[in-house]
Image (tube, rainbow, N blue to C red; front, top):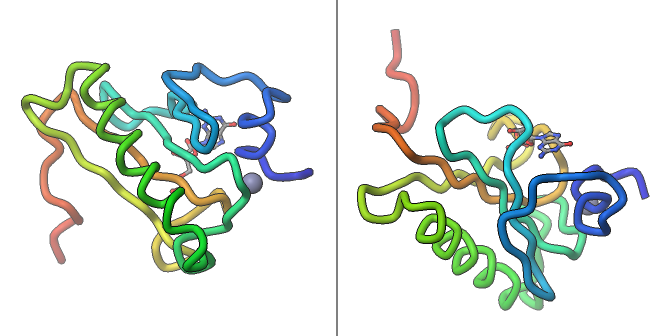
Length: 116
Ligand code: 5GP
Ligand code: ZN
């Protein structure tokens, strides 16, 4: 198993775990871009949203509900936060295991850099 997030889910490499259940796990990003930066990933290896199947409907829903729970538990829900799911090359996805970024703890600015 070469996938870094599969290894984290299996406990084979360490991560600062925030919450987990039988289908998803949430842990702090190793290079945070905001005061709160958590990744929520399915325990099952799914490369990206583009690779998910209809049968993954339940786990896709659980990712969102876990992201919401993390935001509540880490105290950023009231003022708001951003969920980002990068998909493949043009989406800027670097780790090919589906993950939801939970970002917050400060105003996050525009969704994308404005065209210059
Ligand atoms: P992507 O660009 O694929 O949407 O985001 C991948 C994220 O995974 C990046 O924010 C990166 O910092 C994080 N990351 C990569 N390797 C590791 C790791 O081994 N541990 C943790 N906790 N985060 C990682
Ligand atoms: Zn994986």
